[in-house]
Image (cartoon, rainbow over all chains, first blue to last red; front, side, top):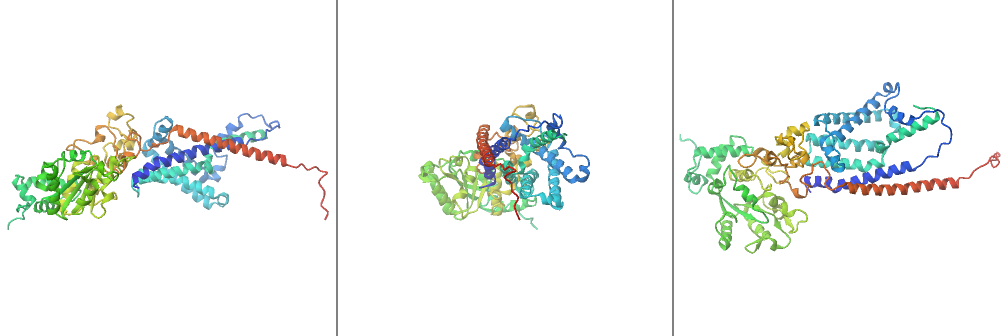
Length: 219
Length: 371
């Protein structure tokens, strides 16, 4: 199998399978989470605070007072990584073509050089966050295999994408195939690992906000 | 002292042939300089090449055409440096070629056998077209199957040049579902040096360049992993494309005839396979350096790559999925939803069972354990 055949497989049957597992997995997990059903809270809410859930979706996304000073690496690293990844996924012209072919939707791309810079920032942030996770005793204690797995499968598409774009070390056709394979690995694992927070993060923030609002600690 | 003769004109040599046809030393050196440039050799090699070629005897060449469309021959007849005439009359002795030879029938086959006998171990074998491994009757010449003719003729060859994607990798005949069981030359011949000059058709100057290299050095040029001469197939079309700056700036044509296309913006979104295609189109160009497909407004289809015909739709961008469709994903979502309902039902029944099995304990039932 030569490099082009490998790329054809990566764009063809392998991608089919990965996307099918991804879509089925995400829908399954959403049903599972929403289907858990909470017991109705019959108590009268402690404070009358409508919209606490919605506000928490925002407030949990920005550091509470004093926390930026205490945990600058976590906050800044997290922002840089997530923003860099977001720009790379949704604003690189070839990626927009990918989404267009599936959804028919299209939007303007960012210049490749800007996307490139955001990928570098995201990669650097990932390494800083990993180093911090390993050196900070509390974070290390809280970390499980799932955290390191999530880190690795997120890092690989960024690295292979960067290498493909810059023609580093490996021949381009092969590197592009490897990039697509790494994305497929991410797609397959996403619904069943901590990476599912992509879909659940704002849902859980709303739930927490609403729950605590009823208990009297509205945001 | 007499200066070193640049053009050997001894009887029977290429030099003599050139002199007879009135080719001057200056013209010949010009040709050699152009060729060294094409082959990415240092300029000083032009003199060496001139001496070597003029001293050489005209190279016997046997050209076998199998499952092909004659496009490769059409392409080489449009060669401009050297022209086909120069190639045939001055540099090589084309002893057998279906389309170009005058002889036919038994006389044609005799010419092949004679050339094989006279130049045993020295002749160059050029093959265009793939070889059917299914029914031998799919393609045969003078009652000889393509496979048998290739094996027989390859035996005494010094080297083999597989011209065109069909001979090099199976090409379009090998495309799914490959009805004739087509294979490439390298799939059959394992004990001879094989130079692949793929392309559908290959660039004429690449074909003549490879021949010139063989005449000059008596050896085959440096090849890549797919057996292609690195001098011509070392870089992708994309890397050498004049539209590349637009790709880097994120400026793309959306259709073949929009304002962006007319401004010469990148054709990536229209399915250009330039980024994964190794060939010299963007540098040597076609038709005496006039242009190449991307220059005339159409994306590269990747014709010099193995299995290019089955490598996804020609008009889909490289980053697009080949076969996944929204309906497939819709079905996946439905399966996911069904599985989700099942899991939810299971979770709820577990919960209900736990609730049912929950035994209530009253204060009266609690007794202090006596020590």
